[in-house]
Amino acid sequence: MKKFLITLVMAVLPLTANAAGGSGHLDHMDVDLHNQASLQRGMKTFVNYCMGCHSAEYQRYERAAIDLGMNPEVVAEHLIFGEQKVGEQMTNSMSKEDAGKWFGNPPPDLTLEARLRGGDWLYTYLRSFYADDSRPWGVNNAVFKDVGMPNVLGSLQGVVKANCSWEDMNAHGLAGHGIDPLTNTPLSNCTSIVKGTGELSPQEFDKVVYDLVNFMVYMGEPSKLDSHRIGTYVLIFLFLFFFLAYALKKEFWKDIH
Ligand code: HEC
Image 1 (tube, protein in one colour):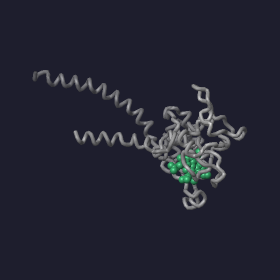
Image 2 (cartoon, rainbow, N blue to C red; image 1 turned 90 degrees about the horizontal axis):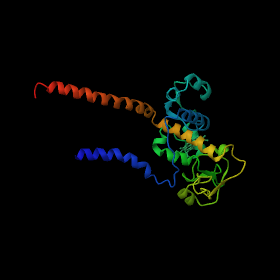
Image 3 (cartoon, rainbow, N blue to C red; image 1 turned 30 degrees about the vertical axis):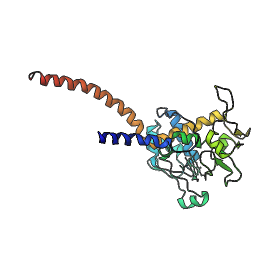
Image 4 (cartoon, rainbow, N blue to C red; image 1 turned 180 degrees about the horizontal axis):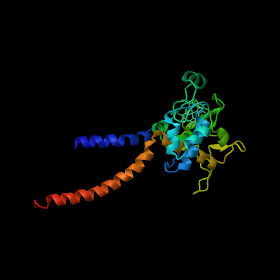
């Protein structure tokens, strides 16, 4: 019994770890690993906007291509810049020392980032940059105070102006720009987007980030796609096997009773 309880606690602990992160308000997103089109768009955004600085060392292009239903040759042609082959890991050529000098903190490898921070955190973080002239890159972030990363999606989102303290924005969220469909009131009056500075509407921008985070969650646990599929077969097998075992038992015990 004691062993059982310990196992149970160990199994539940990782689930609570993310919730206790203390990162303030997080917007929720429903990860959908079965939406291949979303994962493909996410990979494209990741390669185009993130891999200049970040690597995904434990992910191979080819594995991602196959898992997401893309032809590896097409991926090699359109999503690999430079000399890399499709069978190689998704690394970049920035050295950690240079990166540390340029940014203060080097950009970490992002293969397992979604497991570390959780999808909601990433979804909120990437939409929570705002203009702050006191920072080296001219931006701060409502989830990650004094972050060393520039707002690389800024041209899509536009310039976000903030009118509240960091603590306020962190507690109530600033990413929820736009209108609450239920109450028809602005979701956050802490921030506004400077008109004409972003290529996308807030809804379109949210979708780009949604796809990107969806891909990052896949990357953190690529075998999850397989385990969903295999899990179904295992259950079907167990179901059928139950009847077989039962029939066999009846047969064996027939003469003994
Ligand atoms: C110009 C370089 C650059 C680009 C491009 C870039 N980042 Fe970053 N990123 C950084 C740096 C530097 C840090 C470290 C910030 C710090 O610790 O203060 C960072 C940190 C992060 C973190 C936080 C890591 C952690 O848990 O501490 C995440 C998540 C992240 N980046 C995601 C992304 C994504 C997704 C993209 C693509 C949309 C991207 N980054 C593009 C430079 C970059």
